[in-house]
Length: 519
Image: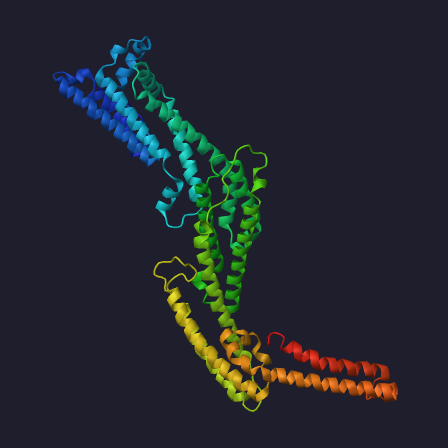
């Protein structure tokens, strides 16, 4: 009894164990004629059919687990192999109708499996797994497809499968064309997968580095990465299609968005300093604008990527919305955040403004109260439970919260412009307000009153002109020694110093207000 036992190690994979057990134990045991004594031919044939179907089912399940397409073998495989030498001598009568039907049925099944594999579109498969996949998905897709097709090519080289094709050819079966079609599809698809995988390899290295760094570090690599994309497009015989290129750019733009997310750190962006948050957002907008500039440059010079090639490639003729839809939407969100933080920067300037004049103390107190109210509503942003930088985030109320915030800040701007109006009427001076005067609501309110500053400037210019003319007349009539200069200076130096003071009275006033344009 012990002599009949086969001793060995079990494989760590249960499915592999089941496959070996079925092929080496169950199938031979159930189909051994010694064990079928007393069985009718119907039962024996039925057992053979069922055991072969179980064998094929396990093989296909194993293929699904390892992401491989497995060609199941027909029930009569052993009979076909035994009859092959006779068929080779043109004795085709050994092929009975049941064997012929079994072979043809299996070839049709193989063709369906191969067509299903070949017809899988990269975009459909990649986008079905996640909403916003990264470029790694397209690299994995083609690597997996290449391995699967190489496995199919190896199976087509198996002696048993080649024998099936040989038998179908000898008996002049109409399904022999289906067998040839299987071989053609596998070889054509294998050539495509090998070509694409080869040319994507250098791009994958650059993308791996790109996805591991922040956007600030990646800016210097954008040009070289885009040049690599152009070379892949120009030199790959299969990857240059519109479908492949638009898919890659969509995945790459997802990667860009993720990279900006890592750099900006949206979870803590409202916790820190407003100036720092503004600079982060503005810098990343500049990075994305720089990428779009490099993209346009590459698109304009596609011919340089075709140097040394002998085949045509499809130009980048897709609609911008097709590849830039999500990225442009993301840029709009960044611009909205930039505007929000810029509002905060401007309102923080109220803290440093101290107005002079008779009403200065009252105006300064009013500005301080406005700043306190602004800080109160800004603190609400620190409690948001969503990603404010992601325009596609679920349960995001950013747009609603932004509009509410803007409505409140617009009211505060009108309050600030009212205080500025009082300051302008009282002191004719708004120098400390700085860029706050350029905010649309404040500018619209203050602009009709800015003539006060312009009138003062005109009056000062007139006074300087009169002083200069008087100084000039004294010099012409009485000479250098009679000029009204500082007694501590020699006459020439004193005259030059006096003229510089006159110029300073004009230029200083102009520079103090050059930020603000007035018609």
